[in-house]
Image 1 (cartoon, rainbow, N blue to C red):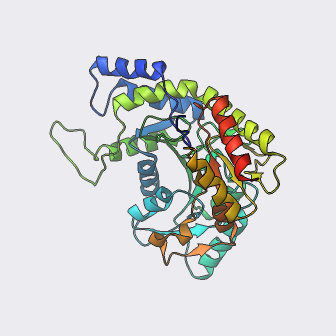
Image 2: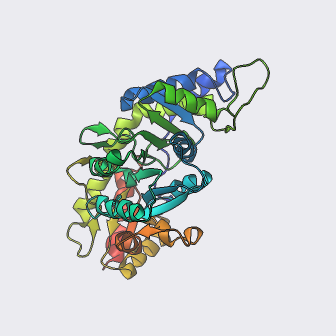
Image 3: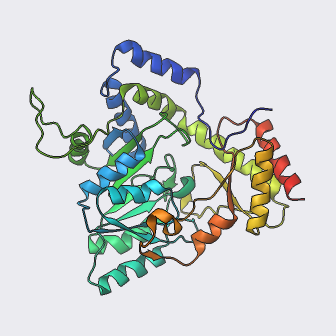
Length: 371
């Protein structure tokens, strides 16, 4: 039997044709018409006119933080329950992350703990330079509650929507819920360019400035002229062509991943001790990963190991940033929620490329492991 991956790319003839079209056009260098068109496509999907195609979502977070004025010595509040790239981008700027735990409604940043953190910093004469709000596993954070805390204090909000393209919050597109949004098109995301990302902003002027920074801040001169430090962060024309093809298929990717989640829920509803990631009424989840929580860590590990023995990939939920060795000494406002989810939670195979037989195999192996 073939290996079942956690979240493999779903690609085929449509993407191949797009890549060959770009290749045959002669635009192999990191700029070209496919990049411009991909930016317009994403701008149309999100409703924000400024979109910048980049080499990764991490690059997008870095540029978003710099654009918001984050620099050495600043404090940036962010989710602890996330991938390390969120925190790393803060450190790229010379700033320090301050980690906020999750709520149980969405597993994303807790507005209550965010309020506590802002108040605590204020008592010590500090004000966060920004908040990086993460949309975990394709589900939006409670953006309005977070904005209500930040906007009166002029604290910019950057939305790390790396996992959430196609999700919505109260009818608004993920990525447009803060001041700047960032998507990832890494190989395991709901759509992929093999590697890459996109920054979105409501301002074309901001987008143009970020394009400038992402191309080594080269001034418009015949020779190479630079008056500030820039970065080599642009997406290639070939990858943008693939992204355009994938974006056209995004609705079907979302539908299939949500269907797979429903298959898991229906098949495992009678198993005691298993619960799924909650979906609050204000969040329309994009289905990226189906996540379950077990009664205890022993049960979780037994299922994960049994799946692995049958060549089925699964993975624990994110290990919180405040307990990662690289972040030793960082400040945090936590209540144990994310640590508990990490200890008992598991991501199940969720790719839109999975067949019903693949899903049945995962379910069967899980039920055997839980006997």
